[in-house]
Image (tube, rainbow, N blue to C red; front, top):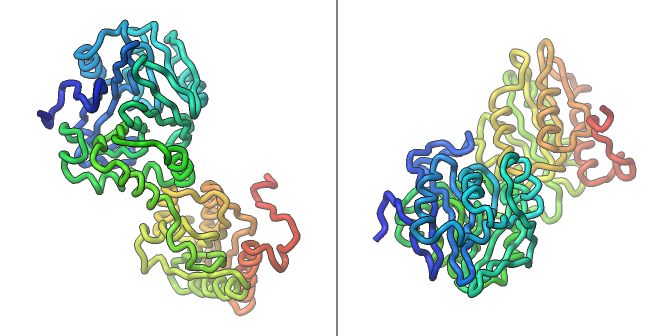
Length: 422
Ligand code: FEO
């Protein structure tokens, strides 16, 4: 019988146990992630004829209950291996003390993880062995295989597979912040929102790495997924893999018929930046192979724009300068882009100003900070754009289109980002 307040090791398969901790009171994880009903730090123990493996640990403040659960099942001298699927402190908080209690145990970790671990635990002696995809360890009648799955969501991450029980110990992937001591997905509360929220905030920027990992594990027989947070997925585990695949696959990819998507966002106080945006839009639309779209930030929610941006090829932001700054909706949208991968997209900024006009430079800098390429100097117009200045805006839009399609003035010339010149 499982209770909401789970203080004991829980058998999840033959000689496999959950030895994690519940943290129902946590409300914010890693500063930015909301955790409305807390989280769990899942760690596991696998017992074989020739020894025991511990897979991950818990946040440091929960060490005592972690060790108590281990002691319910085995003695420390039986622990032969410590497997670290991920090094973030919520999974390695109890590691230094575990290493002290198990000097004979060998840590199995990804090669990148090992170099990070040496930086994390500087005062402990430990034996370690870097492992990569296909490597395995034996507990006699049980064998654990490793799969290197980097950037889910740190460079160190890996998954571990227990062949005999067909269990995938997945680390953060397939996890979520949802605390329920009943532990298993078919008996806990409704955690669908938490599962997708976790994906959106933790895994989404690494979609390509998610797809690579799914490819790596696709031939495994999986009866149960044992993630590092939230419910253990024993009921229809493959559904969760499928959902990850869906969430990581670009949507409506054929909608643009191979055209490049340029999104132009703007906000305007007196209509001047709006006129510039329309001219940029007209200019870009003259370039064959470019699908330009114009959005007034006054009329939109941030979240759908983030979705749209994720699958676009280029972004242009138009902002007036107010009190020496770009306007808040522009910053809000830019701040939300940390959730997605914008590396290599084309970026540009423009705007009308009255006195100093800092917004265009600030937005350009932010776009570079998000790893967009920003080859064109931002376009600024003092107050009301003249016909000539609007023609310049059209030319700016056309240049963006040509940069995207490598045509016209940019058909042969190598594209240089202004930041390359610094
Ligand atoms: Fe659950 Fe990335 O730590």
